[in-house]
Length: 457
Image 1 (cartoon, helix red, strand yellow):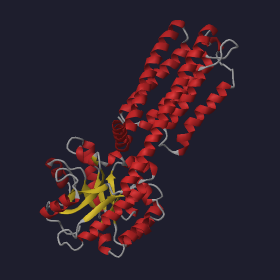
Image 2 (cartoon, rainbow, N blue to C red):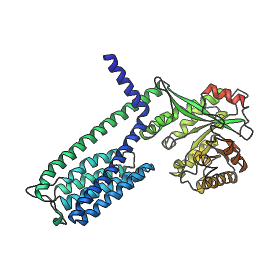
Image 3 (cartoon, rainbow, N blue to C red):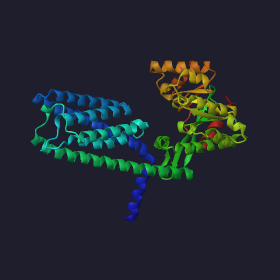
Image 4 (cartoon, one colour):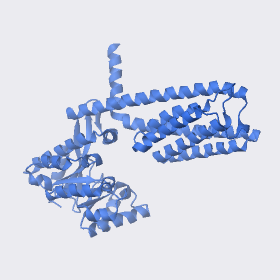
């Protein structure tokens, strides 16, 4: 019996460690979808009731609830999480406050109870906005609590003629108090469970780093002649029980908790060690390895000195190391970023701009930053044969890169037709499943030897 319990506990810990980010997202999305449907249903029910009573002001509020519920539903289905949450909480705040002031004015016979829903709403805001900026993360919760305190301490009502009769409110106060407290308990339980799961995932990841469970796979990058000139190093978690896990299971959590900094440092050490190991191999010595650098990682004050320490007295390693930045990284504190990039470029390190076209970087950034390569985002390459906008963007990126003296790499190339379109418009470097999926080290080395690793580009 005890062994079965231990096994069940172990399975649960593995499930938490590997799937928490995805499970958390799905859980929040289901709650949001359920809330939007309840808004629509309750709005329709109360709109019907108050239409029969001729209380048109309340009917308008119910129509607002219905429309907002539909809006939250549509935004959730389109994965606009922040907009959906803002609309959801703003609407619920207005409805709760409006119902409390208009329908639920306290009397000696029946106390006010509608405002109690602001307490579970405050807890829900903690969960919904925990990954948002500080002002939003705490602002919504504080607004709910302050509003609750104001309503609890006041008996003012702007439209007393709409107040529900005392006999109905007396029963309703018990029902609403019970419902609000039940919701509060459930949300606190979810919040506690979520916190415990996140702490367990933190521990699992730190153990994985100590025990070297993380591994690098390499996705080949090929030139116009089909020769391998480099690869992108991609992180995987070789879990002892669950097998090989892609970064979608843990990278987002690592970013949020700051664990991405030591994890990214480990990736850089492994990459530089691999480049040094290839330095005497006539086939592999000219390969470039690209590594994704997170915003938190490069913003560290010690980033440059630590990387130069990893490179050490191996200039060839620096010349074959490429750091990939995203547009969200380069639009913040550009002066400091430029200084760090320039310092590393002096030692031979190269920089590329990853997923170009999906962010908000300006042409001034491209002109001023010491970038040597642009990578066309896979979303544009995927639609390049069917979407006119994607075609225009791809052509523009290729022309722009060539005009600025940069190499242009197309990511996510999956079909010969996509490659043919890219070739016709001047792109001569490719990466994608048409050529190879990300490979373990030995498989990548075999692939590079088979495809005649090219000289440095």
